[in-house]
Amino acid sequence: MKWFALVVPALFLAVFVFAAIKKVKLYDCFTDGIKEAAPLVLSLFPYLAAILMLSELFERSGLSALVTGWLSPAFSFLGIPPEIGKLVLMKPFSGSGSTALLSEILHTHGADSYIGRCASCAYGSSETVFYISAVYFAGTKKRLLTPVAVSLVANFIGVLCACVFCRFL
Image (cartoon, rainbow, N blue to C red):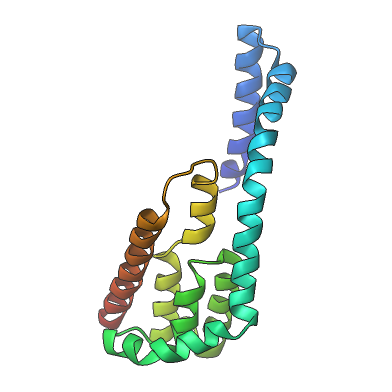
């Protein structure tokens, strides 16, 4: 497994060697690329800041707990443990917040329990929809409702399937 740690340095070395063979001014190309990336980063910043603030507000305001309480009976009916309801709601907003929730669930219920397996699979089968949408659609003026809605439905179906599979495994 130690040789695997050499893959990234070997890749860098291969790029440098290839650039030297082709007589490319590597440093100049690198700085040109950074000049082109700076406006992109600046255009993404407001969208990412908004998503991060909204996800924090969702959690800190207590709205997350309130919505989780409302949806708990529906989640139970569908086979999703109510204990992971908060994780299901947080994952589309925040990757780090949902990682903390997953860690808390695993610490409380154990990794081998049904709830722990279900939480792990639900975490792995979903994506941070709003963060990804902010990054992908930052420069466009297109309507985002359809792609975001489809992504949220797909996330929920993934969580639902994960919990069904965990029940039988």
